[in-house]
Length: 259
Image 1 (cartoon, one colour):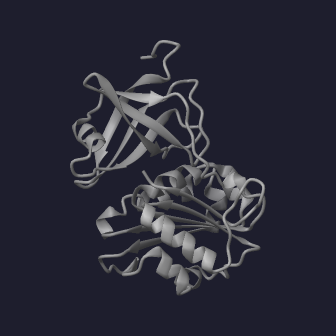
Image 2: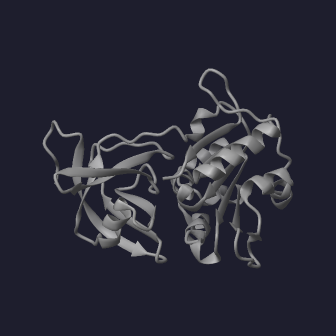
């Protein structure tokens, strides 16, 4: 259902909702024909709330070319938006700001050979979108995604990532990809356990796990997750000799707080 032309948002329909754990959910909504975004950007989603509205930003999980818009949400206790999501069901109406935004875009890097994507929690969402773009696979020689969560049960996208091996636009490049799941509060055989991403960088564990040599000439870092992780990871990378990327001063780091 389209809003009036002067409105800054459209009213969209919830197509499906999937509850993965008591706190983790994914859902999809209809996509207006005119809605455009770049992989790595986020939408503002909203609900009517009494006399006003409630809005929050959520990174888009879908590929740029998808017919629908998919999102990943972490439900926060006593969070007003989380309360709305907890009650949301197929067929409900949700508000979508007409303009996507965000600067966590790999194309901003003018150079580099290896792309390392570092995420905690819902910070994986923009990278899921980025990894469905064939351009990113053509652009970089190697790609790696690190997803850090507290417990194994929160690694809900492992099968989705593995399925990229059979994606018609990706399969010929999939050999370039490495996925490293990390659990900080639980040990499991197929994950790195017990350490946060900044420590894995400081102690060279990630580089050893990948078999890469990180260096400013070749390695590019994209970071998205909870603000504390983003801050600590940035400081770690700065201490290791990398710099933030600016439009007028190219660097090796792009970052964004997860929502």
